[in-house]
Image 1: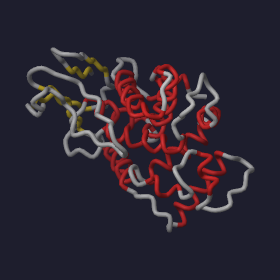
Image 2 (image 1 turned 135 degrees about the horizontal axis):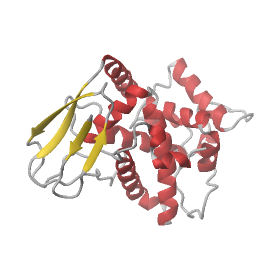
Image 3 (image 1 turned 90 degrees about the horizontal axis):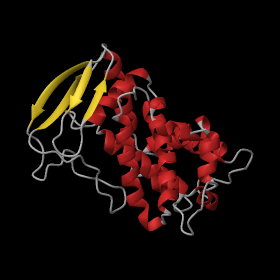
Image 4 (image 1 turned 120 degrees about the vertical axis):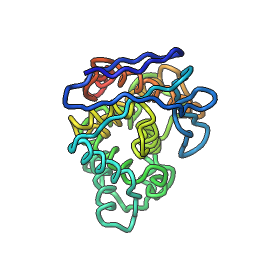
Length: 270
């Protein structure tokens, strides 16, 4: 079965889905006056504008009727996205300790509040203050990355690849912002789908419940690659994040991308 988004402006995307995915075509006139199709941009810090597809005329979307598996996994992912980091919770404390152990094997952590955290790229002695924008899932994403793709994780942490800037992005804080960017891109909290990317992701999620975490890992390596290609400095981080989002969207829209592992940039992970 094929899903089609037609656009007389900047984008034409055609995707094929398995018969198990039940899609219905619909049209609505919800585009804003300037033709953008995404919602109001949001950002943990400042200066990030959303990456939008410009369309002329009526916006054509694709709504998905969720299968029971998709509905269950979406509910679980939404729950994860709504959990705030709570430094008083033992499980959150243990997750933070696990991140330290995965990042610096064999190196003793002196405390959950310590100057040691600055080595990882947190803004201060207490990393819990940096989770406010994206919540506990951003810690889970970092931990998943560290355990699943340790070579890539360590390479980015230590800024081992390419010609680095004198003013580099802080690794851990960048990771939190990447989580937030993906949450905005997928728009999973919306009552009705507003983006084709969301529908594609829900199909992928039905195949792998860790799709969000895998997409996070891809996004991190894409961000660093674009950072190096632009010879960027910290002041340009928001621009790099915008171009990273655009790259992810382009790859997810490719006809032969049915899993996160099918994305061309997945090959950057090791």
